[in-house]
Amino acid sequence: MSQYADPSVLVNTQWLTNHLNDPNIRIIEVDMSPEPYKNAHIPGAVFWNIFTDLLLPDLKMNLDAIAFEKLMARSGITNDTTVIAYGSYPGTGAWIFWLLKVFGHENVRVLNGGYQKWKSEGCPLATELSTFTSTDYRATGIDAHLRVLQNEVQASIGRSDSVLLDVRTLQEYCGEWFFDQPPKADQRTGHIPGAVHLEHILTFNEDGTFKSFNELKNLYESKGITTEKEVFPYCAIGGRSGYTWFVLKYLLGYPNVRNYDGSWNEWSRLPDVAIER
Image 1: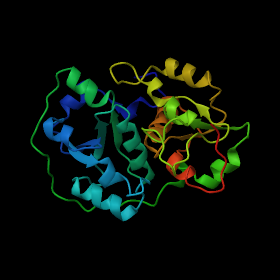
Image 2: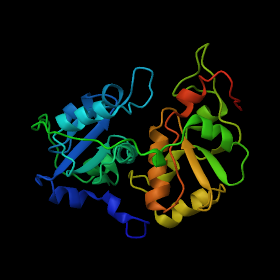
Image 3: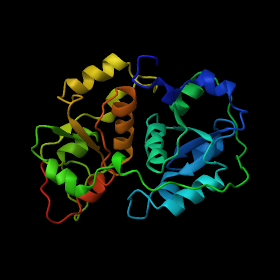
């Protein structure tokens, strides 16, 4: 991991095993359903539900500071707590890293390989639900430097000094799917004009860990995504693109990356924007 631009943002399974009982650490598991968590999770991990804790009913990211403060407080997290994020899907922890950074939380790490790696190595698992005393958490204002909004995305189309990076599946990019299934009558599919496609799963090894610095560097540069350009990743709801922001900014050291968290969920519903298929 030492090759990465900032290797301190990652922890491995051995490190986390050694710190399971550290009172200054809070482990967060994030998933779409609580069932996997209830069956077996990393000891001491608190569960966050993507749909009820992190998204609004219209699937927009919930970036309300008060809601975020309540989520952190009931998870037993103080402003000084080190948060270790993971999910059953290996990229989830890096999305949560982005989200916590948006609200100014300083100490966040990603479990490299997530639950997949943890379980495959026979690390300890628990079934009892984790509960902690509520804290008094205070979020800072949203860090606008980590986000890009729709009007700036629109203004970047066709510019040589910026890259719109679509990290969804090829089916989504080509317009065959809306999110994870064929579109319904009122759903517009395709991609933002000029967007480069590079599916985010290409950054994983088979065990769910991140590919090496050189592999990642070559992957992005092969698509013309280079460090001197401003990069705006997007996906369906901002999660996979938040993960990509983490890879580009912290593992590769790209200086100008902002997540379009509105993503296709927003763009496809705007009446006056262009769409390519």
